[in-house]
Length: 198
Image 1 (cartoon, rainbow, N blue to C red):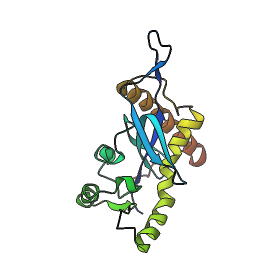
Image 2 (cartoon, helix red, strand yellow):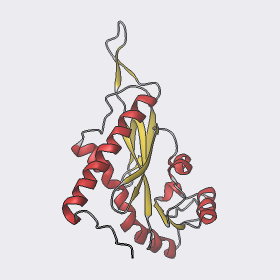
Image 3 (spheres, one colour):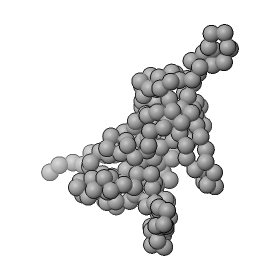
């Protein structure tokens, strides 16, 4: 595809504790967090009390936009925030498949590469299943920053309490991630030479 594509994805981050409650010795929960419930690759439901981090990543792994929400916020609610409007195509999983999203992509002239989801009594067609599999190859690139966050930066669990603090903290993680990604590209490809005019 000519032009930049973007991939939207989300991951749960476990909430930190506020310290022990008086007289009970049990840690209090971060009241601004929420339960993130999602099926894993085997179809088992997994629950995480904390926050959801959603990113808009290009095909080279650079993060162009990021949001942090309580874990119980539906993935699709942040699509407007993450959609930049100048993408040539948007890749996303079925959580972002809504009429509103598809209509917005059409209005911006952005190619729809959002996976489809089935409903009770209306399962996915064979064509939709094939389409989803093709999209999954590119869409999987949106998961790489989360792997970096959790394995390299050890950010699978937040150290801070409250939504605003976590937005700032994980915003700093975006900066570090993009700098490191840029350094990798610089080593691989060097600086692009400016085209001489005339």
